[in-house]
Length: 146
Image (cartoon, one colour):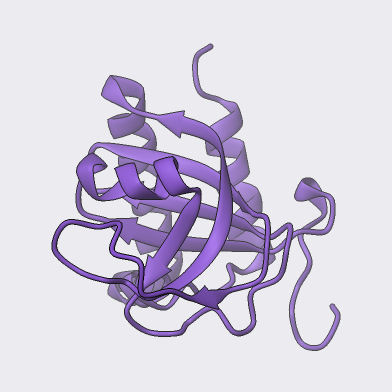
């Protein structure tokens, strides 16, 4: 543990955070411009090389890596909102279709089991995961069919 934050060994010392977007359409600008964004600055404590798992509604999951420091931008890249607080990301793995739905449900079920109905707080505030929960999620992701 360093500065009260648990560093996760299975990602080579990187922190794992969670986020939620309602549709793949909302993820498109993230993928195109390689940023994750919010109307609120929740990124102050984020660091380069942290992992971010983005749940896409009930139908998918994207595993990303933070690649830069947060910034503020007034460039309108989403159709219906500014989302001015942004952090650069690199998409590493996209899980969609039947496999994406299965992984999404399996990981949300695990989060509910570990945190109860408060797991939504983790998604909304991009809170770092407890080490043992992050290991379980990695196990779920590694068991997926190739």
